[in-house]
Picture 1: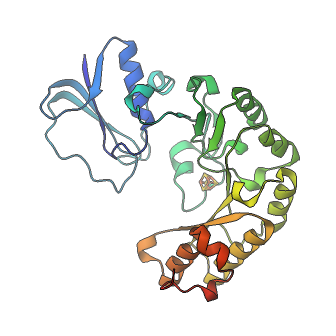
Picture 2: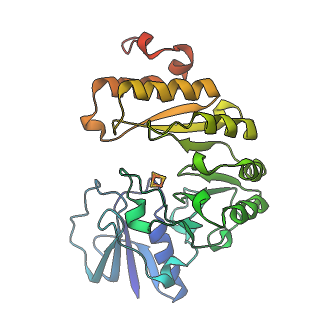
Length: 292
Ligand code: SF4
């Protein structure tokens, strides 16, 4: 069969579903290529991760066109025989990392996040590292909440055996850190860890303090996403930012629904996320956006 693939979001980040679809069809002896408008295919797969990406409107010459991905339907999943394939990394030669999920799902059900609806309210192991790791130097894990999985310790031990750099791209849940897990993480090769402090009503100060004591990493290795413009006041945003800096973390401001965010919040993001400005100008009140 002649199979065409369309990465609707562009090629800025490897599309895991398409890489698995490619492996699946190649294992059956099919001819798999990026879709080209003038060619005819037996089947074309279109994958779209983001809802805001405009769809491909061109005419597709194919007997069958299959659309999938959260950008089309939040509930869309791959058939099991495809989901369990090792990704075909040759599709994206510009990326040299391994990509995959060891766990899926998250029990938190944060109101601004679609993971619970898409993957379920339990963090379950869906693969071993061998399912997608082929000796690359960097492993990019896409797990939404790995530490919420009952097998988290075993998974962390398995990751340390690879000696690859581990990037927890979706961050780690600070509330689920303890001394043992911190020790296991210290055995991993990581360039930076990310946590989050999304809810200002939840006081995570003492937990951040404990984790800092366990890990003993420099602030440049400890990033924290701070969600703003979602049930928080400007004072609460500032409180989390100042507290995190005080405790030895690097805060990073995320804005929910940025187009509708107040100017103050967008300025706050400019101040915090520019490390040079943030480190030289200690108080937001002193930040002058005109000077930069
Ligand atoms: S903890 Fe993270 S992954 Fe889980 S629901 Fe909240 S934002 Fe989503």
